[in-house]
Image (cartoon, rainbow, N blue to C red):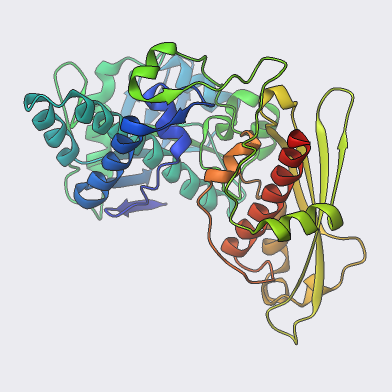
Length: 418
């Protein structure tokens, strides 16, 4: 049985997700007054927010055609039943998350003080926090399940299609009765079925040992709706559809950038990279090769050369392969793969390779940061500033993926300028 209790969870909401919830199109540049409000909301929550997470595996799960029974409580959700049945689920995890009551108290205070802009941006940031908490909880469950040869299914909640919101009190009661290490959850249910504080969520994640079924049935892959971009257990690209431009948002300080027209500029040609331009120029000329295909996709291959941190600094070489979608779609990252170059032996001297070879190589194979996202998103990707030459730690591997994607971005943006 797994039980998670976290009163200080990660709340590093991805900028693209916050922007999406604010209603901006993906290619919108948030600036001026809107930029100030975005930064203010983040700062306020970092100082005053009280997020929390609770999750526990159900003791028993029974699946019927018209519903699901968790422990001793039956829920009439045909959609949840269908999902669990198709995946041949054997278990489920009940989850509750919340952004904390402090945010809603402050938002109401701002509204009564006649500050609708601050109210709106803080309210939306609360929603972004809840989405992020559910995403990060799913990622933690994926890590736990993967080590036990299981897969986690997409979460489902009362109020979603084919699950009446009036069953929310029963789910909260089940979670409260199941908890063992956390006091009463800081959330209540109103007669309407709505939660108080409203920036909270109750959910059920299914568990299955039939990992192959999750891979074959795309409706069962939670990754396509999961914004945790650096997850090493990702099985499919994040497919959050771009939103159409909304000219009314210009009043909030944004400016649309045309991206679908033939003369569109999907890459920032004056980008600020984490690597100096001289290094990017050398790498793009010496280590990167790109092929532009007839269907407007791009295949890129990058050769990374480094050394182990131990064992006398043995040289190693890895090859990165990246497939990008068409330019007029913003060069979305469709496929990614990292593996030792053919004939390389240096990687076998890495300390993690020698202590747990299978785990390390599986992690390297599965990590696909920014999968499904436009290449431009690498410019806003907050990643560790790790200079280690080996691949032993996740921070080191994310750092290298950032170097690879920035080099590809630099090469394509340079081509646009020319």
